[in-house]
Length: 146
Image (cartoon, rainbow, N blue to C red; front, side, top):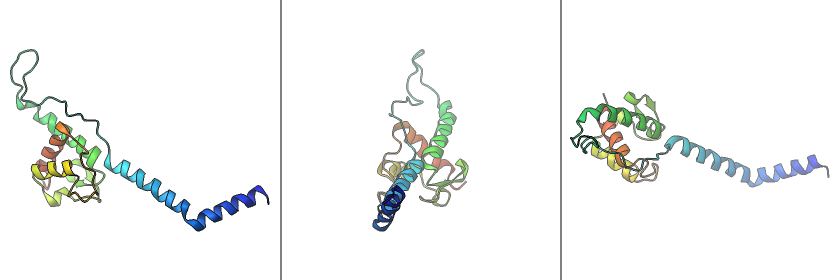
């Protein structure tokens, strides 16, 4: 038997058993999950706009709200946009609900981020935490359907 014959025989055996096909499906599933879900390195250690500033001891004003909305939009687009449609963010995901149709309030978005959507397992829980999760919930609820 030549080396080409043994390679062809091995390919035929893999093809018959379906191992190659299962391996390919596994790789594609992992790649889609990683690409669609994004990642977050948020530790929840950011300061909020109402904490005292270090140099004056004065309260920070809500002027940071625009920056927070921008961060919420960016976090949504990179972490959630692969699965969800939201016109304001320019995302057209189809795996999860279309937020422009759903128009969820902040509490619903925050709960979905915490528990992983409806809890069906389609969306991993805790994709975002702390201030990032709050910023995304605020952002989505303020622009959905508009």
